Structure formats: C-alpha cells, structure tokens
Length: 71
Image 1 (cartoon, rainbow, N blue to C red):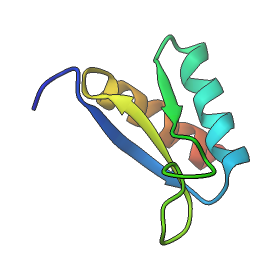
Image 2: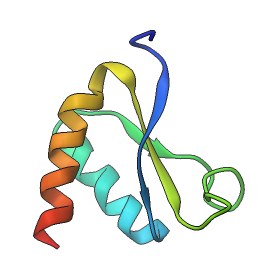
Image 3: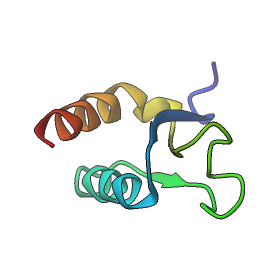
C-alpha cells in the first residue's frame, strides 16, 4: 500500500462528531478530512467517513481511539 494513499479511518454517526475528530488530529499535526458531507463524505449506510493518509493511519487510530473512549 502506498504511504500517500487516502484511507477511511473511522465512520462517525454525524458531521459534528467527525469534525471534532478532525480537530483532535489537527492538534496532533495529522492531516485528516471528511469528504464533502453533503455528497460522497456520507456513507450510504449511515455516517460520515473520516479519512487520513496511510502514513498517518496508525498514529491517528490511537488518537481517535482515545478520543472515542473518553466520550
């Protein structure tokens, strides 16, 4: 897998939760984003996909895992 590829890290239930996660990653110097939440960023089965670069996946997963557990 190319380290510059974009992968879905988590699927959140709503845009607010996803935005909080993006802010948390940004505070830790990890670039992340949700695709336009009005179109392709919304999972057709429900939820909003948070995406990161493959090179940041492991670190981001740990940070978001802690974030989700504190809620």
